[in-house]
Image (cartoon, rainbow, N blue to C red; front, top):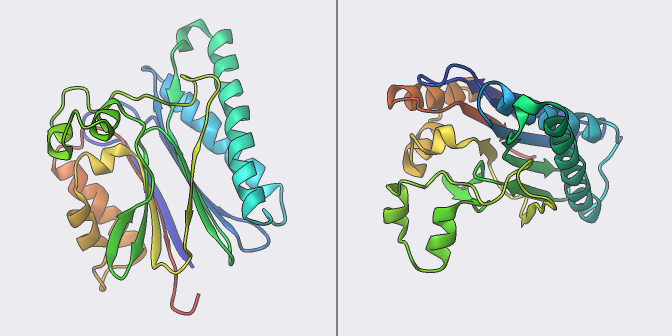
Length: 246
């Protein structure tokens, strides 16, 4: 496996409220996670940092995450704990009222691949040089698409396209959507919407499938392209490339 992750403040925001991590445990199982904080000042950064630090430490407590059912339970239970932590922090810090964060994560073992998400950070797999979105955004416009009130093209230009319907620190109780994905893939990519709001899937795929680029160069190029197109938000990417035979 090759892995690389990076976060960038972008060209407009004064500070970076995203957090991102890739970790491997002693059984060579991988956790990837991206959190996109919200709340203004540095409260979004606090919420995303709490989330990523907690999920990282929880994952590394295990020699092995276990079977698929255990991995799904790990996601669900730890999301509930993180949600409680964010609410507790906000209740104890008046200036942090309303802070929250998205979360997208993936767990890859030799036997399975599962994704989980809350909010509008996205999870993808690359297979046969094609990019497939696994997760579904918890946004107002996505809800309107599902009910037939908006087309996907209309949603892209909708003034409320970034309104979240679900986020850690905003909903109690909280539920994480789980996606079971086949392991016969080339790569996994998680990202915040700072990438997907600037580049479409065709543009992202073109970079990820450029053979002469290293994994680091691909991620750096995606961030550079996003910034060249305006960089209106923080940009975070976690990328895992499976090498031949794995």
